[in-house]
Image 1 (spheres, helix red, strand yellow):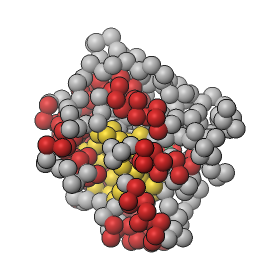
Image 2: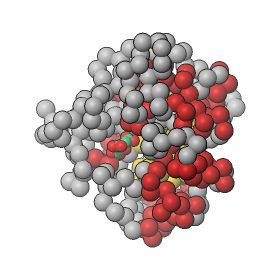
Image 3: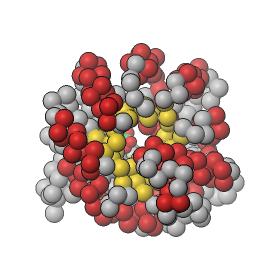
Length: 312
Ligand code: 0GY
């Protein structure tokens, strides 16, 4: 039994996801997912803003196999603060089939960074979503970015679309590859051609070091998952945004399940149906190959890129 009580109203991950109808290409990467605890082994951080249900590395890898993915990119979740032990344990258990994105503070030693690199960490995450984290001064973040750049690591940024204007100068000064979580969280009630998403498109267009995860329809949607009657795609309000990115920046987009889906309020997606949603946003075999295999392999397993092993 975990010693931690879940946040009231917490939705647990879906226990028996369906088998996707979409057959993933060999070598597909789930490029955004997390592990939580288990709390008995890897306690949640005192400064956390939520307490989740446990979601172990073994459970993540079982989902990977069930859905037909080959590899994972595991992103340190805010409920573990800057203690990356659960993430590092998962990387070690993956047998080279997972890479990690860590959270670090400015007092991290060079030795600890080198150890993380050896374990499979390839980036740090800077989180600007106020309900998830306390404020970190920009000079600390820039210092961290400068420390990790020589390792070839990336910076993953998580923010709300309304905050992009204020964050623009900081983001565009980052000296690394920059990967945006969940398309920069657009308000999907606004038009895809409106000024808010136009700014995000400009961000990607003018900065070839910026990539985007076209993930989290279940988090961004207001129309919801209900149109699973074959008439309309589920999460149909998210489709134009994700499709625009896939079509415009086909070599800089990534996709992830976001399992175990922290902080959802109204429904927990069946991960099998989430995979089927990929067919609504990457509509050709070529787009799916880039989104799911070529792009993440180039970014996280460059040693495999363009080889037969990528498709192992
Ligand atoms: C996500 C989204 C969220 C949470 C976290 O690290 C986290 O706690 O990323 C969220 O609540 O929007 O990417 O998992």
